[in-house]
Length: 428
Image 1 (cartoon, helix red, strand yellow):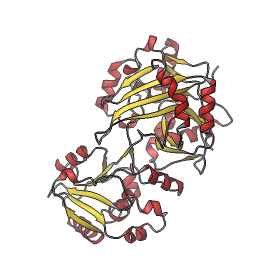
Image 2 (cartoon, one colour):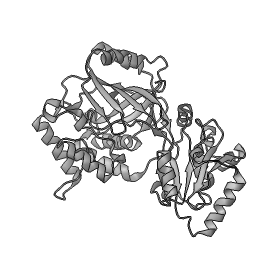
Image 3 (tube, helix red, strand yellow):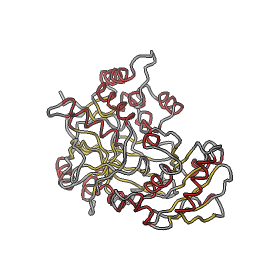
Image 4 (cartoon, rainbow, N blue to C red):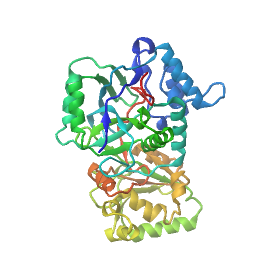
């Protein structure tokens, strides 16, 4: 079973560092150079300066991040709690589908374990590059700077019900409203009885990593490098119940290049689509994303940048996917992204797993409007427009012991960086 504990958090002191609004940042892997500059200009203590570091003098950026952490601690901008606590987070947001929802969760430290039944499961394949980057940053700063987002089953919402009174009885420790309108509020919960109730509710929990696979695998490598027991055997997580009404999963659309001028590849793609899918011409590109979540029928939208005619593709027979993915478990063979990868991306488009890992000939877009614009503009030659995956299917695939293709899911909203950090050395 996963081991969930309160933590001696390292966090900003608003009296010294200023309001949390000026200090938090999105996860490092969604920040472009322009946004990084804007975040850095908000405050000399903004989390982006250590989570996505750049040494202005051209030196080692990881060493620069470590020096900043030490400097902020010496200034009192960062302080570490003497007593352990859990931290409740409430996120009010409007999703890409226009719905306004609230997602509830809490921060804790979780013991790093090998992936497996009953403890912690991944759900997507990872890339080597980001893991090396995060490992070097962890070695330098000796802290988890950005949380992992994980899910657990709690049908009665016992853990959240124990924490919820703290969110209603006083002002939050801090509040951050993001550019997309997501409002994040954070409360520190140190009451031993509340913590005991949460831990009892989590006693048999199996955790499913929703976002942060690279960070988790980095934590596992780091823990083994240090060896022995101690704070380095734990990692910072934000935990949300699978039954939380605000938990939503959105799709990541696939975009492809290298079609223009390659008649052989275009012919192969056209033949594959005709042979394996029922093809329906849609009235408007606005209808490219199939309605609802995946229901076991393989379905997606398709449009290229030349003709710009929108189509809906529906797999003619599940047996086609079963044959192409014969070595994979049944829930995986009903996954839109897996079938697209097996029948199209690695088929007529000729992409290897390495191409997919390094985005050679492939791109992603998390919003439909962005995906459509990138095809309309000719930045990509064609797009496959996908629908969201039910959480139940994600659980089934993880339980089967296999990982989805990269970027199969888009959990929204993200969990900001900078709300709190997890030191990887024991308190002095």
